Amino acid sequence: MNIENAQKAVDEWIRQHGVRYFNELTNMAQLTEEVGEVARIIARRYGEQSEKESDKSKDLGEELADVLFVVLCLANQTGVDLQLAFDKKLDLKTRRDHDRHHNNKKLK
Image (cartoon, rainbow, N blue to C red; front, side):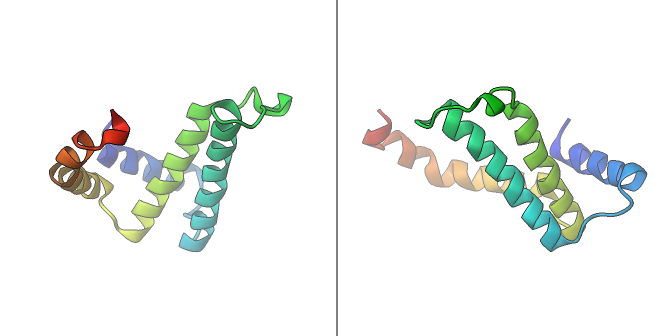
């Protein structure tokens, strides 16, 4: 599924199951909460913090999907074509950063 179709799928889900979109500020707070859950898993599973028993069953993919869902909601409700925005950003990063990263001695 491409980003355009993902935005449409989220919009359809909201229409069928979610009454309406939460307002933008609520969704921003929700996004922050979801990113925090991803951070908690990464810090404990891949970082130096010990993983609590209650965190061991957390699914990183599921938490990343929660982040993506809220990002798609925000794009939909603010009129952002995320496919177009992503394609433009990838092109910009490709042109701007190709040599920069290849010449970064820290990455060797």
